[in-house]
Length: 267
Ligand code: APR
Ligand code: ZN
Image 1 (cartoon, rainbow, N blue to C red):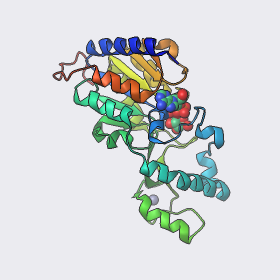
Image 2: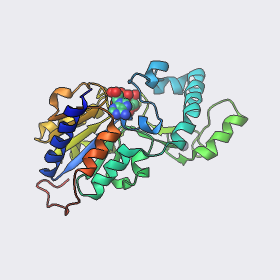
Image 3: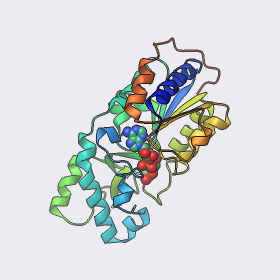
């Protein structure tokens, strides 16, 4: 962790860097939501320290794994449902309003960037969303409130009333195909960005973790904000090891609103 003095000087370096950039994006991981009470996956209290991930193939083929998968999702649902955006999410929205941020590419499934005010079309959810349920076959959408009561009545997992397919929260599980459109869109935007602020990710899960490298390889600057060292600290132009909320708030407060700039490279 940087000490306060170095953190403060790195925050000033980030502010100076952002003022010289025109197409700035953010890339977020679970670490931006821990201050909203949602655990991350690989930090000291991470979910994967307690549970092992359940692959999609297990959910489809093994009734026990399917029941365990749903039990975990139901246990964690209140925490997600009651979570509110923290100062890190709000600071990113502040940067967007001040024209110092154009897109948020997120690995998170909690919908907190949108609830902090980011427009839907400015948030790319690479790993889907836990805020609703979808049919694995026809993608028909269902709401949690309509599905939860089914578990009180029956023990087996719910099926789609349209096509009979299995239902699951609209997230991308291990072993599930990535979201093509979102992944391509994120790559396109990352290659056009001249700066990317990477927040709260261990940068270990690909293809998502390749996004900051895409910006770097296309001549953009990389800012990494994380409690712990990440797999890509060596590509950072600014590296801040500390709490995302405070750091992002200081950055957002350090810039004044600017006119929308004619961008060198359109997104
Ligand atoms: N401020 C800054 N960093 C934080 C904070 C915080 N308040 N809280 C946690 N962190 C850091 C942790 O130290 C950790 O390095 O955030 C990082 C989160 O890393 P992961 O738990 O690996 O989460 P993430 O990178 O988003 O995981 C990627 O893996 O399991 C899959 O699909 C899941 O989207 C997830 C993907
Ligand atoms: Zn269906």
